[in-house]
Length: 269
Image 1 (cartoon, rainbow, N blue to C red):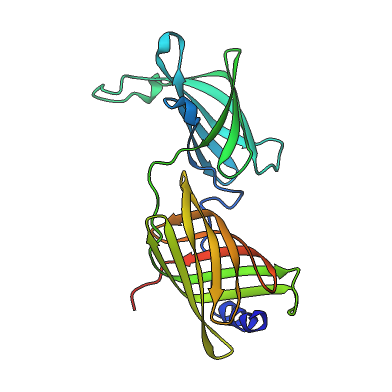
Image 2 (cartoon, rainbow, N blue to C red; image 1 turned 30 degrees about the vertical axis):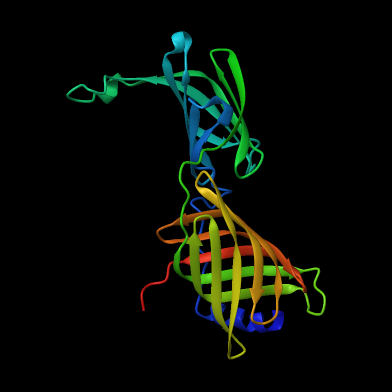
């Protein structure tokens, strides 16, 4: 299959196909509502654009009164880090929300401390923040309240690099063409129909879908009409009305693979 798939790769490159990007090109997109599952009632929103995170922390202050804090410019710390971000923390006050008009001149921002987050994985992290000398450390995870459904027609599939190969050489592979996805509950089947060396071929990747926050993962088995069979995992699955994509790892009887899986939605024909 490896040699045949290289022919498909040349075809894809010739027409300029591209996989959909995540919301940020800097790192894993940490945008989500995060919380501690054993302490439901407080949380922190992280909104990431490139290498900057805007955090909104909602907790309770003295007298159990709801209190909001913001860290509007959390940047990689140390510089270049893709998993650790830090920034100054502020308390903001302003005019009553029910007032007939909003006076932006009445908004004040008071620096109260600092916030740092170290993401230990795509879905977990450690939050440390200080408010007027009081330091708090919490473990956090993305909050989930609804699963996405990937069912649909796409144009895409798998692009990866094969290594530790036997019987075939190491190198790039591409299983790319019409991608159909069927999801029933948490079970997903992703079928790629493609042309290789002038012949029709098909690969199906199936397994359970698990969602954490707005990211998902799929782990299971794959089989192809070319005779390849193996196991796979697609992590950091980001989906939207435009398509979906994720990080692919897997293996079959020939190679170990590392790459990407997904595609833009296909238009009706």
